[in-house]
Amino acid sequence: MEKVAVLGGGSWATAIVKILSENKSQIHWWMRNSNDVQHLLNYKHNPRYLSQVSFDLHYVKPSTDIQAVLAAADWVILAVPAAFVRLALADLKEDAFKGKVVVSAIKGMIPEDNVLITEHMERKYHVPNSHQLVIAGPCHAEEVALEKQSYLTIGSHDMATAEKFCALLRNRYVKANPLDDLDGIEYCAVMKNIIAMACGIARGLNYGDNFQAVLVSNAMFEIERFLDAIMPIHRVLSGSAYLGDLLVTAYSQFSRNRTFGNMIGRGYTVKSAQVEMNMVAEGYYAVQSIFELNKHFKVEMPITNAVYHILYERIAPTMEFEILKDKLK
Image 1 (cartoon, helix red, strand yellow):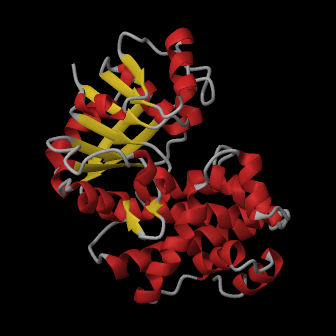
Image 2 (cartoon, one colour; image 1 turned 180 degrees about the vertical axis):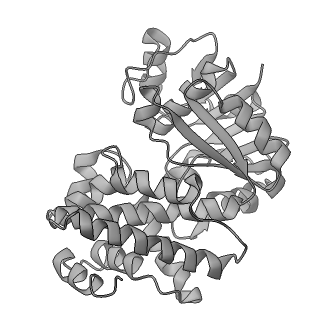
């Protein structure tokens, strides 16, 4: 029986636990909130996220003791919002992940440091690239809960390790495949959240489907330009880990980044949108990180720049999109 630690108590962490439990893995599930852990022990479901999903406590072991959870596992899945990674791991020693395979299920970057999760884990906890994986692909937690057919891509520099992890995920409604572009799919996963916010803003401003189609197609070129500047290798961006993830985040009713952008387009302030959603939209933090990184690379990124100006410089969405629409082709 494989021993897996899942760190995080949100909807995506809950969905991952559900996927893993299908194959009878031993899952040690760390959640910060002790009331949520007790509720799981008493009633077998997460009280705040995907509460319709019931867990077999023979395989799923919830706990608030992060050190005990890590000690019991060989695989560690990070599924907390990027902005809270440092806080969640604050009590751990630098060798806490020694000998373990660390899997990032986080589609965001460490704010202020402007680094990917894999970079942070290598710098702070000395986890080598060969022991790191990234979960990517169009896979909303809500559809996993409904057991809708879903596809995941596992990015890695070590295909043998990636394939072993894929085997833990595959079940009757989830397919998983390895891909040797860990950094590319991780950056793409970050950037698609920014584009989804732009799509939400456009919808909030009453732009139609025609405009959104052009926005998304231009976004693929923007992502390609940035990836080519930051790590120029051959990659086909029409794959599900790239284009597929972008499409589902840009169009789906379950996309929190699109929802957040829609609220901004309709006139909400950033703070009021965050309070009403009561969920973290990774794109809010990601756009600042990508904007700051691009000061060095100087890639043409009109969509990213527009979202940054709206969220961080408080430029009116109507004004910013008047400028943006003349830059799209």
